[in-house]
Length: 356
Image (cartoon, rainbow, N blue to C red; front, side, top):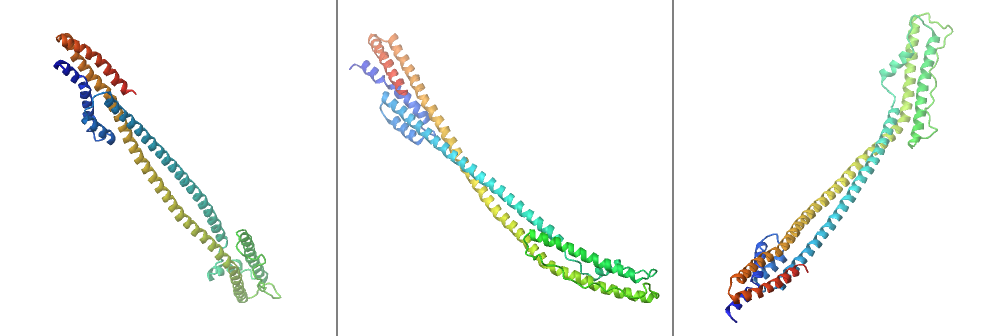
């Protein structure tokens, strides 16, 4: 084979080798490139093959890598969707937990308010000596300029009726409300009967002597004091177990509210931790998705540049052959024409292989 033919033959696919070499060297060293693609590029760089099969193999590798990237992206999307569902479900659980806890707590608070209001009504009577003495003295008045037994008796009767009426009315209302609150108390329970305070008995209504009047006032006030004291004592004895039961029930609701608060706080914290963890996992998935998406775009951009490299060196070789065709000797012009035709065919094959 003569030297010119050998040179033209050897140069036929050299442009392909140069294009492939530039393409591979431009991207093979990039750290973010796919490991599989980097291995293929390195193999191709060391391969002596310079035909359309080697170019087609590069194209196939990029297509396979493209499909793998798309599959990986879809998997990340599905996992992020699952994370969104977990976050949504946990948020719904959190909202429901808060709503139920608030409703329960509000109901407990209402119960506490009911018992607090009831306990105010179950207030025990003041047994202080001065308090009862002032009450008795205010009603059984000392009137030295109007000294009559009937006046004293009227005052005593008014004191008895006032105290008895007040205690009976209060106790009746307390019994009724205690029954509504299901505090155990017998409907037959009543304030024990006390004999009335004795009347001042004398033939003449008026007291002629001031000393006699004063002695009678002191005696009747002392008896009235004892009577009121015993009435208050009996009333307080009846109210004490009712007050205790109501207070214990109120305290029970307080403890229930505190327990609810502790349990609810722990549940809310756990749900919030779960949501935070799911959000963190989603953010990590999203970061990996973005990284894969970036690599996918880089691989696609890289693959598109293979055609550009081929065209660049194809045109360079074409210009070289055209120079031989225009300025070479007869043999070179003839060979250049043949290899221009082959170049066109080779180019068509290679470009076609990129799109298969």
